[in-house]
Image 1 (cartoon, rainbow, N blue to C red):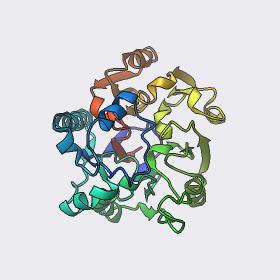
Image 2 (cartoon, one colour):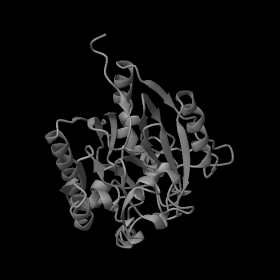
Image 3 (tube, rainbow, N blue to C red):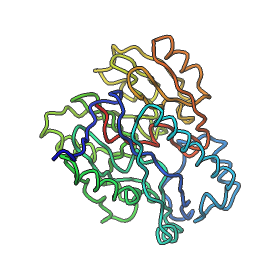
Image 4 (cartoon, rainbow, N blue to C red):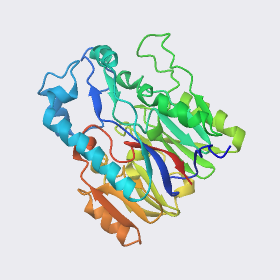
Length: 327
């Protein structure tokens, strides 16, 4: 019994103790088999992809220098996390079979925040909307089962997405970790139409009702991929936010919080997608010194890293990690 692991996340800013850090692999989907229009990315990134033959190709082969930088970014993040005595776990790499299969619909092993998530004592496998991400949980599944089976965690999965009306069926349910923010017994679920959907929200609301959670759906601007691109909870009473991204306003529970406001054009740069180590330390990209200065003025120490390549693919520090223990 003494070997039982602890699993649990109580909030976005509770002290981070154990975390999964993603790999850096991406097989780009064939241009005829994608449901990702890339509208949440910066224009220069879209131009870069459009000027190359990327259809069904491995990102590492098309952009070898960027691949090297990308891997270095994740290695630097691991070093920083371990500096704070955080246990870091990594998913396995894609198999040759997965890479070959990915030449049609794509394959991803690059943002571990989304394919699973931890809420309270539950490890939950999500359901991904983009075709190239549908199987992204598989490289991390062995890690999840090892953690779940050696702990008291509840280990569950969303239902398989419904494709009875064709591959573009929008029924889902779709639910992705980037859309989920935890604040004690309140969980916010983003919905922009690009990732999680209403059916995913309904599933989570019903599941978490067993533990008395309040689950709040948050409607987002259609050019925002996930809720964590528009909102970061730094500590109790302080958030980084782009209010323009919220179709019906910032959630009522957060309206009296101190706000560090971010312009809408910085959403595509992933300015808001930082990562709290705890209530005193916050990781963010060195490009956004204006955010770091605002944090320092409020007594939070910024830790800067260059994450340019990761951000060009649609995610930053939060997207690259998923906590297993944060309490």
